[in-house]
Image (tube, rainbow, N blue to C red):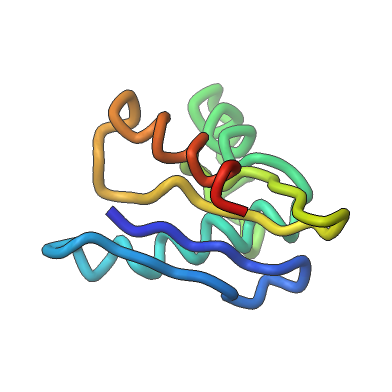
Length: 103
């Protein structure tokens, strides 16, 4: 599992991963966090659109159609975090929500 937090410009400010995390999970977690910044909302919206047949999402640069990139505000500054990639979603949900408590 990997978790990333980016600032309002999409710049990585915090990253952590568990031992034996897939290498691909590192970049996926960062890109999900950036997607939440650039589009000002959770990445689950893109996933839902794609599941509903909206293939146009695949052509939008920077849109990551995977649940996990969520908006977070800290001291009135918006940042985004990612719940972590590499676990089944039901097990990951508490991790994702826990990111809100972190910042």
